[in-house]
Length: 378
Ligand SMILES: O=C(O)CCC(=O)C(=O)O
Ligand SMILES: [Fe+2]
Image (cartoon, rainbow, N blue to C red):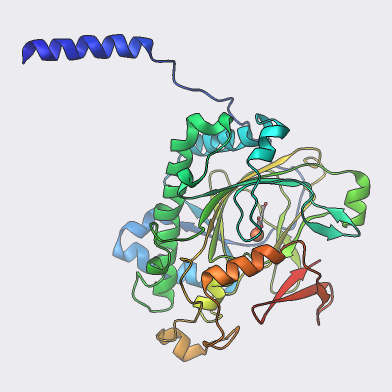
């Protein structure tokens, strides 16, 4: 036995000696936050570390369900990733845009119109007056080995997989439990509709907004990503210092979302509206040109877009005592309700390419997806 131990140690020493140095990446340096005085939205800050005790969960349920019901956006802090881990994810994200040739990007560009996979090149979406977007994104299903990925990120796939897992289990699940508790439903009601192992498109997305020409800015009135609601149930946005994200407050005013170091910005999408019978409405938001002192900089983002499992029928949880009290706001009848898969395909295929019709409200355009009116804000 002893000699085996010795051989093992010798082997390990030799092997370690031959192993390449740990792979390092150029750290992504976050630019400074804006010095401009902007009108910021007043958003609740949820300390997720409190979710580990029953008393903490009680407190968070009230705080979070009110934020989701009234504002639709909130911050999460103490989510379990350190600032260093977050910085590293942004460093890896940046490789996908800066360290991959245009040719290789073409190879990994998503071919499907019904799901985002791989790259979405710039200029695929209509914004206004013939101007198209300057946003690149790279979308990765949480089961990251479902597709191959560009060479530049292959050494970091484990970290991207861990990132997806962390978003799903350590952020999405606690949030879904608190949202269910806010509807007085069993804690796991929404978690069961978002299973890690189910067929679903819950995905990581890295995005890069490139600065635009003065003409593009003028024609779009500085809108980089039109006002919209998200397709899925919950969106987790990893806060980064370049401004531009705005939410439409209930008083009809667009307000900026302020950056908080290593915080998450979380919002509900259409699917939460369906499942919660209107109690957690999807938040209307957009991205405009960053403030004066940042507008020359590219804007890098990291997100987790959670969707329900593909086979989930998007009907409200009528059994909720809260919904029975306040009433259900239906988007369609239960008979006509789409499944998650139908909704995703309908929304993704139409996004940025369908012909929008003027809506009833000013500056609002509309389209019909599976008989449900979807609005876009200018
Ligand atoms: O870039 C952002 O801050 C928000 C992006 C967004 O709203 C989206 O991709 O749905
Ligand atoms: Fe969005």
